[in-house]
Image (cartoon, one colour):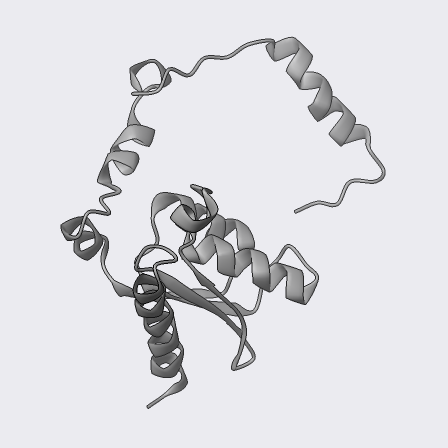
Length: 157
């Protein structure tokens, strides 16, 4: 068994264990750097009442904390299922080197975790989305961007 398979097996084991212990959904994730697991995460949405506590997000947070950085450059991510739109965005923002997954989005949909509506929703014009979204106080909001542009304390990311 190669490293990729070993890390994926761990992600799948975390997902299965998570279901068996009743902590959350069937999703597990590991972050690997230089051939070693840096952090693990499982879906904790229902046990923490946090809709963002997907396995990938939990693993990203733990890895960044352990590594002392907001960037996972040079890290590979192994997740038991193809990432949902939120997790995929978080993985891209983390700048990880590669993403490996086990189950597909179609597999997830078949057991009640269907994210297709999110992909459809973001393609719609703002005024046609299911949740109303509208802009307020644009001129005032720009002040924070002006402050960022002028700041000598900013850390680009």
